[in-house]
Amino acid sequence: MIALQILRGRLVTLRSNVNPTFFSRSHFTYHPTFSSSGKKMNMFNAINNAMDLALENDNSALLFGEDVSFGGVFRCSVNLRDKYGNNRVFNSPLCEQGIAGFAIGVANTGATAIAEIQFADYIFPSFDQIVNEAAKYRYRSGGLFDCGSLTFRVPCGAVGHGALYHSQSPEAYFAHTPGLRIVIPRGPIKAKGLLLACVRDPNPCIVFEPKTLYRAAVEEVPLDYYTSDLGKADVLREGKDVTLIGWGTQVHVLLEVANFVQEKLSVDCEVIDLVSILPWDTDAVCKSAKKTGRVIIAHEAPLTQGFGSEIAAYIQEKCFLHLEAPVRRVTGWDTPFPHVFEPFYLPDKHRCLSAIQDIMLF
Image (cartoon, rainbow, N blue to C red; front, side, top):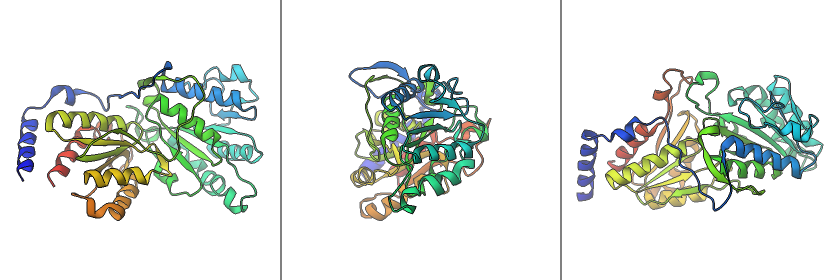
């Protein structure tokens, strides 16, 4: 009770003496992952490097998509056509269903397909091909054939000016589909490792790449060929009071808020980057939830049936007796993604801070 009263007093002080630095920044502040050696790259450079290595190490690998030949709208494939030729790096028609169907055919023959869907918002015409064909090939044949060695690269999420057709985060639609692997990197090091892991994985994979990080995220990226574990979350910050779970850009929002409440409220947050949506790391999440007793999940996608719903349900089922408060979700709203009202739509640091205050006072 005394600790609760002290926290209430700190919250009153916080609200009356707002830190202008924290509240004046934009949607997120990037928190880099550090490596012992490497070359300074932003995220699109790291993805380019990963695809370069994939094409170099696998003569059967093909890279294709809308405008991919000249480098793509985000420049992720720049110079690769010149290096590997237009038989291996080439443009597709403006037809997402055709891109997915062709990619499945390529993978069916035993070759490696790396297909770019130019924006996540336009992946839906290919939805049937991905969930009804790619995800089920191995099962329907009894393991006789499959379309592993198939990777879709999909720029996603808020970018500051994308509005309703260039800002969506559709990961939960695909997470309902057994047979797929779905990952979302938080920065250059992870983007390269996840992409190379997906290219080598024997299952069809989708890499959702937060496009606002293409240039904003800069790290020292190792130049060698390496892979990151699929299906494994990263605990980026140890803590004992509240577990904060996010992925992609949202991880950086949560890290900033965690540092802020540690300094101002002495609330110790554990921050988890889920990394992999399907399969997701239930062990890491439950271990943290049982330790802290309080969990907040934040993602840009709308609230209803967002992937946070699955995580919250699992925590309630497996960790109920360890919880000190209901699992909270801080998400986008159940509306089309707005343009000028984007700042009000996003689960930014202000909304995440409010959720931490509420869950600590429950």
